[in-house]
Length: 183
Length: 79
Image (cartoon, rainbow over all chains, first blue to last red; front, side, top):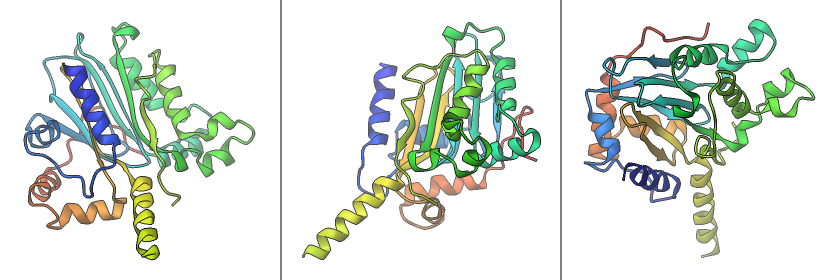
């Protein structure tokens, strides 16, 4: 039932309805927004929990336009990770070390949180990104001739995979689903 | 009439392009993902959060903006 609810929510998010999108009272979204157990993370922040008994129930982030949100959850073990990754963060990290990986802090945090989890038990979801801005101009100049590294999504996936976690088709189903506009 | 149709199609195309995730949340207990999308660009989104576009929506956003940033001890910031 839960998976069905999640799928219905996804489908309604992806379909073009009348503008503006409204928050329906009683919906999952209204529950998340109004719950005192909701913790919001800001862009360029991440949050980790490795104990079921501690921390808020919902972890949320707003304004995931061309950014990418990473959620990883081991429900049985109570371990959880959420991040809101902005592209300028990758640029900053490149100028510090001038090499990949561009998101070492994300990889390290994921390793720390899920060190006692079986990778098969960790559900990873990457949400956001826009197709037109995925092939980043700055990344092209940083990595000439390495086409795969021009993609913002590639670096996020690389950070997750480097932490020993697994990505499947469900993990990336909501990644770069909207065209977006050039800035 | 053609102009109106063209304008309508242009609007639809812009909306399609600007469709993006405005809020994403996950339930720690179940791993269920909740997503919410908007058509507007980032600027319009900010305006809609502040303006009386919809009473329910504005109230929720206003509540959110009044909340102090919730930082975890593991938070990382760009230098």
